[in-house]
Image (cartoon, rainbow, N blue to C red; front, side, top):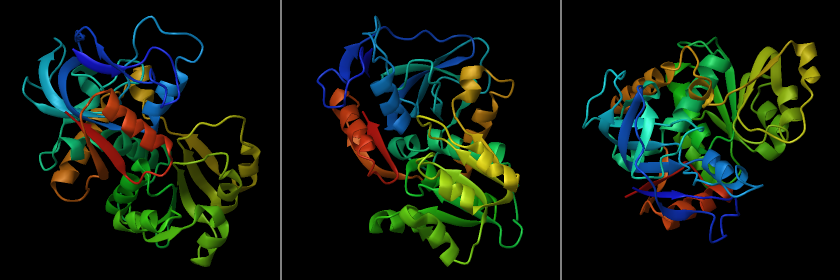
Amino acid sequence: MKAVGFFRSHPIDHPEALLDLDLPEPVPGPHDLLVRVAAVSVNPADAKIRSRSARDARRETARVPGYDAVGEVVAMGEAVTGFAPGDRVWYAGDVTRQGSDAELQAVDARITAHAPKSLDDAAAAALPLTALTAWEALFDRLEIPMGRAAPGATLLIIGGAGGVGSIATQIARQYTGLTVITTASRPESRAWSLEMGADHVVDHRNLVAEVRALGFRTVDYIFNTADTAGHWEAMVELIRPQGRICGIVEHDGGIDLSRLQGKSAGFVWEWMFTRPVCQTADIARQGEILATVAAAVDDGRLKTTLTRRIAGMDAAGIRAAHRAIESGMTIGKIAITR
């Protein structure tokens, strides 16, 4: 099969950063679907894997990145239920397995769901990883109750115009009733964040002052999708006593958790790959979340965060998407189709 991958970690403009390859077709395991991939999208995780996972030595076998996909089921393992050949599915995959930047991919059926009928392949491919990250962060990690929020209850999303922030804003507005404050600094990213449903948009470069200028001394929950260490002091200042902060971006060095002690506030990580990588007892929860999101999309409650399409699922197309992601200037998501 045709695939895009790498043997050694390089900057994106290096000629071997991403290569067009011919690889053996994957063989599905007992719980797997074999999917013919129609579209993928690119996340910061893709670029991190490419640039960090083979720094010290050349790999003997190619690594295929890609952690979002929409495609058609062509075969199944014997333990799979709920799917049939020909089904159109979507998923975010497992970072420890070969990725979606290929003609065919084997993926655990338990972290897969039927794709929304109302979106084309590119628009659907923009959502799985970010929607899973946002849903797990809001409801599993921050433990925000679904339904009507307490009067004045607030959620601050740092990085509101990115892929995760864009869908997290929509999910929070649809399912929690919280007042949603997001951060964005450029006029176009501010406009996008408001389009996604933010009640207020503030500049992350003056975070504490701008949140308080809105009339909020503290916020109940913080979901940081951007720079964990860089925003730490502001988050400590803004979180309410007994509030909770969730982060998704790793960083060098440490953060001083003792700063939260006086407020009895908590900090928790969200990593979307925890369930598939650790084979948790509730691994099938990811398939359930994706099914819920697909239904919400088809009902008009949630919408795609796709902002750019690239035609050609080859090294040139994937390279262009990685370059854009690494610029730090993207709004929403980029998808690549065949």
